[in-house]
Image (cartoon, rainbow, N blue to C red; front, side, top):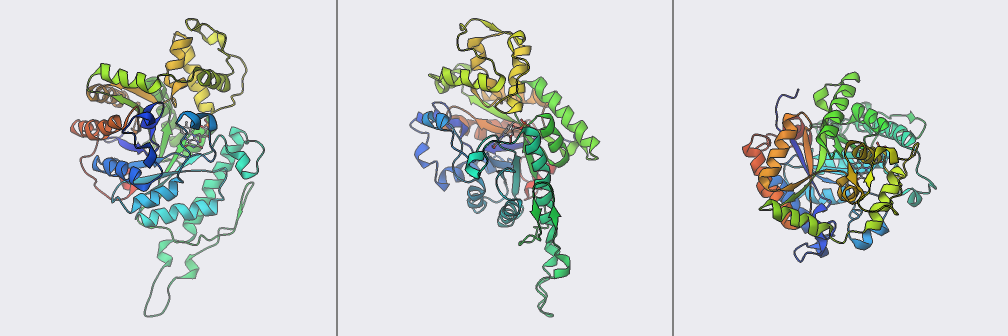
Length: 435
Ligand SMILES: Cc1cc2nc3c(=O)[nH]c(=O)nc-3n(C[C@H](O)[C@H](O)[C@H](O)COP(=O)(O)O)c2cc1C
């Protein structure tokens, strides 16, 4: 078990609180969403709450169907955005998302190390294998999950080798002798593998004081194997506590089997919050956010994920495990397909109930609708049951809800001994290791 019950908490820079109808509110600031000030404000609030990191998900395509009504988080390049935030913050980690599918590893290694230098040790890399965007990079189809993770393994090995190829100590800067750098310490990597051929060395030294933390998202068999080898943390979708407990235990066992300490891998589910001064207010916020949600899109999502066509079903008909098509290869994320199948197997739900659950009308994240006290109680329970090592805040509904999460719930967690009261170091790796 971990030494401390304190949590590693991150804050989403994807403005999840503007999803659904949230962006239509007069105070949503949606017209400022492509400017630095919008994100600086969130980063300042997250740093004031003493969170471990701010986090930007990303894709390399535009989802037209989502974009037409809101949502769809492809916008500012995350690493460029975080470089701007590096100048505006002092302590908080800066977690960027870059897929292993599209960008050459040399460029990723250089950009991430540049962000790490500019922020003095606060960069992090959220490693995704991506689900779409292939046609923007000359690929007719996305490779299979196994092929994408095979590539991801080699990609990360190349990036790590590049970071080691030019150690900081090679910068000797000896004014007496005139030796700026010691070339004998800077080595090519001469990598030649199935996916990449890279000579190296990297053209920027490694920041020596702290490594770049690696985070991963994706919970298929291949995804878990990958995470247990490389990741310091997993960004997960775990809508129910049992799913989180099982996933966490599995990751810890896999990490130990790889010769790592089980405590070196942290399960951080997304936490979707709809907070209000009362439960009724919170429920109103949730309902207002999803009012008028496109039923057709939800049905298409179910069909795409698990092959079940509910379009002709009456709202009150029960969906059972016997209705699941077998076998079916998902056209979406395997992680999310499994979560939806699991929900149908676990609970007795009608079509209309199913369509309201986070597995269908959200990102499959853990969701709390209630007061700050309700959220504190549920988070404490998940901690006590060994379900989580922390979470990534993805507040919903409104800017006010985002403020409540950072300005009331986070201090309440500090009071309960679940979140640091102040930073004890100034690198992202330090925060992860010292929650
Ligand atoms: C919680 C979560 C967050 C994700 N975030 C992103 C993202 O920001 N960008 C992206 O391209 N893919 C994202 N993915 C997709 C994964 O990188 C991966 O491609 C997908 O889940 C397939 O992996 P799997 O087979 O292990 O599920 C995310 C997946 C999960 C489960």
